[in-house]
Image (tube, rainbow, N blue to C red; front, side, top):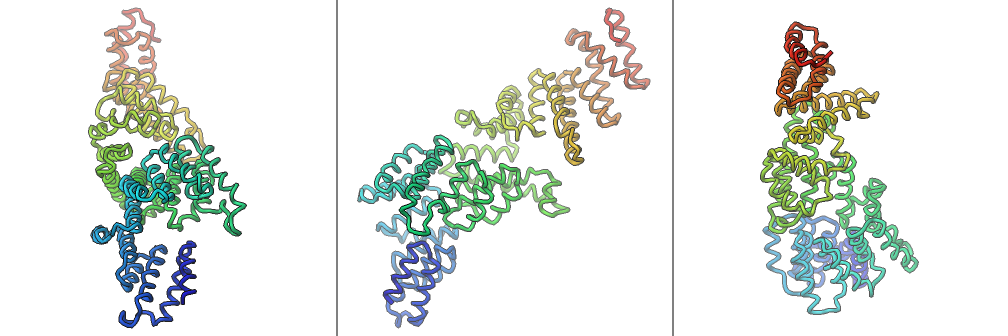
Length: 546
């Protein structure tokens, strides 16, 4: 029995709780298994507690709770139940077991671990620092503190603590990886990957079959440092590793960045978020799904009806995820927290409230295209066209600037800032874009519809503010592209407006030639009637218009 107990212990601490559980089952069966507690010696009953620990690490939390209940009341049992309550999201049980924790080292480490897992990093730091004050030789706690500071984005402080630990344990995979992550945040992926070479140099000292390059953490982070290179192949096999939840989150980000919103959603749809980062990512995924083209959404989901209702539900859930982060006491004054609250209000179309939060983080977001897009859109929506234009012009990423919503808001801002000719140039650039020259029928139809929508916006906005010359050209182009007389009323009104502006001296006289040319193209009595006063006035002023 003693030999088997040590074998189970070795399996468990060697990272194989499955094999350890099999040995504990063998020991329990040999002793009559679940016989009454009176006949089972306490040092045998505790095997149930050890088995519960194995079940916890295997992710079988309900089984772990049931197994722990068969063991004696010990501090280990309390810790197992405490961690299971956290994993199951049972706040009431979590509080109950928290109250039963003692001041022992193991209990306090468990408490700190749960604080960390719940995103309460400062609370975890406070516990680790107190334990270090009690015994400065607990060197590994420096790594835990460094990990918390990394999460709090104090990357320099995290590096200092890691250097202290690495001076005595230079080949620690966890510490070297964390140092590389700090370097990645402070500098770039190339420098971060150089930090991992320390592990390669010490690989010759590793036991057979313990290849550092095959370590899941190393493989995962190398892909991060390389900007997601080969992400799908490298991260997909790691999705089943319970110690690397980041693999799922990063693969989700990879899919979002590559326009695969549905694949990103599939990764997270059954995952209950527990940390602010997870809530934000799930919120972003829901938001992208909710704003997806309706036809594409229906095709991806294999639906024929109710896709609009489903998309509205996605937007509602996105708003809820962002609100949870933005309203939480720990995140409300952080940059991600305020950005989340801004996103919540943007989805609710409460742009004034969104701007309060966006403005509060503007100093920290000068290089962030996402911020400039949101700030520009919200400013424009409340009528602050100047700020809207400044912010939209700061956007450089083509994933925004090439999209119709961006062009529409930019066109509106240009017109409202007295730059209607630039809005017309934007239409010309869109008309000359690659999608309108493609042979793919679906892409061509989409590009054509985008151009028509942009022209309609420019025509309407220019008409509203009295920029009749650009409005006239836009209505004329709409009439030509749509092969319809539906835009004749707009073109007619804009032509009259140009004439009135020329007479008032607000428009160059040369523009009358364009008015006459456009009206000449319309072979109707109404057009001829409009031409008569224009031609008569032009002759009287000595202006050549034909």
